[in-house]
Amino acid sequence: MTGTRHHWLDRFFAVALSRPRMFVDGWGDSEVLRRAAEDPDPLGEREGPLVVRWGDPEPLGRLWARTGAFESPIPSPPLPAAVRPAHALWVTATRDPGPRPTWVVLAASGEAGFKRRLQLVGPVVAEGAGAVLLENPYYGLRRPAGQRGTKVRTVADQLLMNLATIREALALVDHLAAAGHTRLGLTGYSMGGHMAAYAACHAGRPLAVVPAATGLSAEPIYTEGALSRAVAWDRLGEAPRARLGALLRRIVETLPPLHADSRAVLVAARRDGFVFPEQVEALHARWPGSELRWVEGGHVTALVRDAAHIRRAMFDAMARLEAVC
Image (cartoon, rainbow, N blue to C red; front, side):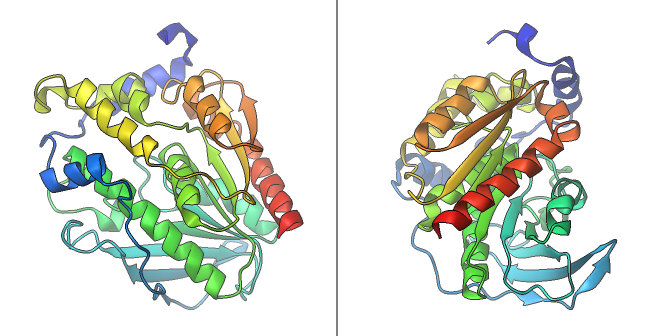
C-alpha cells in the first residue's frame, strides 16, 4: 500500500494520533498474550443472563434515553477491577422501549462517551429503531488509573479491551433477546465495526450486521496503516511488528463463520489510510451473501461526510433480517 492512495485527512490525523502513544508499557500480562495466541476459543463459554440496572427514561432531544449499568462478564483479573463496571445508553424514539428493531452500537478507537455515536445512529432511532450504546472498556468512565486518555498502556490491555467489548456486546444482545427484541443488530465504526463483526461471528444467532470502515484483520491497521504511528514500537522489544502481526493473525484464524441467516452490509472508504481496502474485501469474501458498499474519501471523511450511507446500510440490513426471521 502506498500513502498516495490515502486521503490527506487520514495522514493529518495519523500525525495527531502519534502523541501520546499506545503500548508505552510494552506487551503486558503474559498470560493474556498466551491465551490470545494459543486458545482456540478465547471468549470461553457464555455465562448466565446479564443483569442490567436500567434507569428511568429521560428526554434526550427528540429521543428518550435510559442509562444502564452492569458488571462485565470478564472477571477481575484479568480485567482490571476499575474497568469491570460497565455503562450503556439505551435510546429510543418513544418513552416505552418495547420490542422493536434494536442495534448494539460499539465505539471507535478513542471514542469515549456516546456523543459521536448518537450523531451517527440518532436518525435511525428517530425512525423507530432502538440503539444500545456501550461505553468501551478502558475508555471514559471505565479508564483505569494511570492511563492517559484513551491510549491503552500495553498490548495485553488492548486484547482485553477487545475481548471484553465482544463479550459485553454478546451479553447485551442476549439481554435484549430475553426482553422480547427479536430483530437485533450489531454495528460500529472503525474499531467499533471490527468488534461488531467479531461479536456477530460468535453470536450463534441471526443478526443484522453493519461493520463500517473495518476489515477482516487488525494486523495491517497496527503494523502498516496510519494508526501504526501511534504505537510505541521502541517499547516492544525485537521484531515487534512481526510479533504483533502474528498475534493478530492468530485471532483471525480462530474466528467462526457468521450465522447463515445473518444479513450483513459492509460500508468502507476507497482511500482509507487506516483500514486498507484489501482487508475490507477479505471480510466481504469471508461472509458469503454479504454486501459491500464503497464510499469515496478516507477513514475520517467517511464518518463525517458519508454517515447517511452507514444509516442506509443499517436500514437495509435490518429489513433483510426481518425477511428471514
